Length: 489
Image (cartoon, rainbow, N blue to C red; front, top):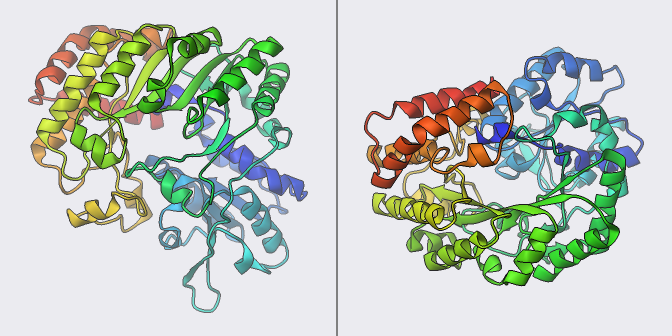
């Protein structure tokens, strides 16, 4: 449900299109999020006899189900049209994706150059296909999957080459919540140097020698200047895996923005507890002055054992200290992410997380608590063998991958009934134990108003359940699941 309140420009698709456009291929984009009831008509309008390839960007979880629906429809309607899957989901067992007969190719890792090379190869009668980095395809001789490793480099594009014009007509439909800000996602860094055991990034960057690169501050500011001038951008949301590995880098970007007189707000998706520990009051005040209104922070757990298992290299006391520090700068919303259900986690450790969450709210009333994500075992991650040792079997089909949703009904084999009920309660209650629907959304849509009324009425009960771990008669979880599905239907 949380994803229903954020709809950013499909930057991954724009990046993927760069090299194909440079190779003089015509590229069109259909964002199915904008046309959930008419995507067939929108796609059909884009396809002509000259179309040679349809690409689908896929995220693990519910989007897999949508991708299957679209790809199967494409193959039925246009049987000669080649199809390729890319995106985050393509990094996990791409050979298994080809068990879906409607998918012809899979691109793992960064996709812009491989996509252009694949288009060239298809146009030339599938010549030199085995030389394309990151491509999985069926061997013509025996039909078995063949995979070439991705190129061990970060994908860098000059911002002038990003084809924003492909979504010009839909700019007003992108943003977050029901706010009037013109939001643009942006990268200021590439990669991530950390080795969190649950995260797919270490696997993705495994073969890249340098795990983290900073984009020049001047170049980032040039990009922002372009977006302000061209699209009246007034909110820049940095979607880096982690923006604050080098604190001076963000400070240099802020200085460039200020020097140019750019009137934008800032948000950061990636911030770690140990990084904020290194920020003094002067630094935080500078973030406030620059218009920073939110930091998404990976707190993850209130259990020290779980934090250590995740490889976070922080302590619970440091999380508390960081939250109190941020409470002194209330203009910055401290938005905390959580992960529950790791192999071996106990009910007592869930209770430790609940206790920490409630303390964060007490110490910082403006803190935002996101619903905890259910841990999903992803092949190639450090924790994956521990999940397998506890009885986990990977999905046997793409339909099963579609059920692995962090806020859905996915239940690993080590969950007891009481553990599963507690996680369900925590996910529902997390929407209402803080005041996020009052502080984040001022919209007048009926769903926004309904959520604010529900927050006001259900908030006290949610907090009571959350504090004491009460899961009896949890009919609100059924309502929560039904309501979440209403955003996707």
